[in-house]
Length: 94
Length: 107
Image (cartoon, rainbow over all chains, first blue to last red; front, side):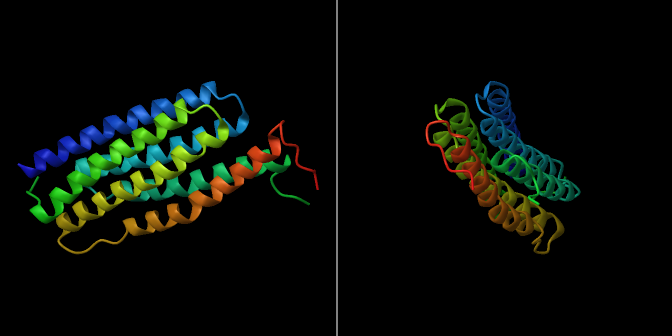
């Protein structure tokens, strides 16, 4: 009984994350300034981590955890490097 | 699928639902607000809390499945809590620097 409820809650959360991903993608396409687009891609990777973790809950496995950790790592690096590039015009200052 | 105990499945269900609504609110704020400085608030606040809740739900479910406490998910929570403000601060600095209305001196 509670397992069914948990799986339906996971499906609802998955729907919410997919909708949030679409909103962030719309901001990525519409965004008037480059920093808006970087913020939208940052939101998109956080939503993608949430989608992967909810899939791990629904399928009752723990292999999705490593993928989520890798996505968090790469997302942080890409977002901070893009913000750094927008700030100074180059990533590593001489 | 074997049945989960109630102490794990009820909080996990609540965490999943609250996290979905919070993440949807954050991304809707990213789409609907009108300035970059307002848009900065919604995803950085709501998405961090939403992903914390989904990680807590995942930790509860895997602890109940393996019948021993699992602390792997706290690693991602710690990592996101450390790195999300760093990205927000860098983006905010870039936004202030690139704002045409308030020129900041190029040092």
